[in-house]
Image: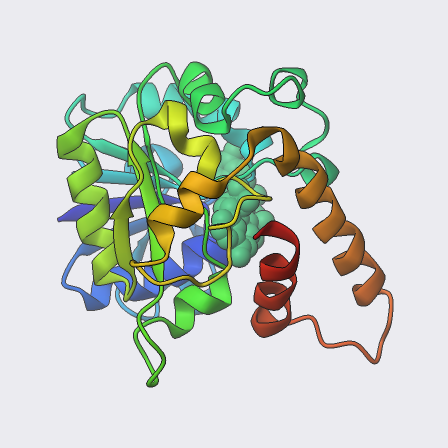
Amino acid sequence: MKIGIIGVGNIGTTLAQRLPRAGHDVLVANSRGPETIEADVTSAGARAVTAQEAATEVDVLILSIPLARIPDLAPVVAAADERTVVIDTSNYYPARDGQIEALDDGQVESEWVVEQLGRSIVKAWNAVLADTLAAAGSGDAGRIAIPVAGDDERASAVARQLVEETGLDAVDAGSLSESWRQQPGSPVYCTSLTAEQIPSALAAAQKDRLPRRRDLAIDVITNKVDDPSATVDAAFLTQLNRLLYR
Ligand SMILES: NC(=O)c1ccc[n+]([C@@H]2O[C@H](COP(=O)([O-])OP(=O)(O)OC[C@H]3O[C@@H](n4cnc5c(N)ncnc54)[C@H](OP(=O)(O)O)[C@@H]3O)[C@@H](O)[C@H]2O)c1
């Protein structure tokens, strides 16, 4: 498949390294232009382009940018072919994104993203840490799974295939209206569960508890980061999330 990725931070870079190795033709873009994209992003064969080029004539367009920046991409996404599958990895973190009233009032994050873009998306790779994704498929540990939510079965199936090709199991989590079950603070959120564990974890999510749990995790992480002797790595974050979210 021909795949555009807009956003080459922690998650976008990991996808840009994994997807070419699975045989895909991958284009990558950020907000500042192709000349600013670092060599490690393109080391597996992805090509650096503008955001407009990453969205043009591609089978799949992956958006991997801070949620508050999603509205900036509306014109770019509007120019994409209507058959292009748009996948979004974003999560709402008020400490990073600023307060967004509709989300603070409980709107499902992916439904807000759909409103901003004016077209449907699939929600995938939002519930895995970038370092966990980078290591996925290696070692003897059981395969880690993530939920994939969407309203269009063809688009969701494409996203699940790509998730599997990045070394993770993909679990169909249903429609976008139910995708709050995989938002920050939920039992499946960056807790490295298996495909067998995900359905009951999705079912156990409690919508009104998510924001408080998300913010508790951020408080702990912020305090840890202030301590120079502390190690805040994927293992620590996964343990923390399991403690707070399940
Ligand atoms: N970090 C994780 O482990 C993780 C895990 C799962 C999901 N997520 C979610 O995935 C999204 C990306 O996270 P991240 O940690 O990878 O972010 P990040 O490291 O901060 O990188 C953000 C990327 O988005 C680009 N960008 C921002 N605004 C843009 C715009 N208007 N047009 C084009 N590109 C733009 C930035 O490019 P410039 O530098 O050129 O602005 C940068 O390449 C977030 O919503 C996050 O919550 C993150």
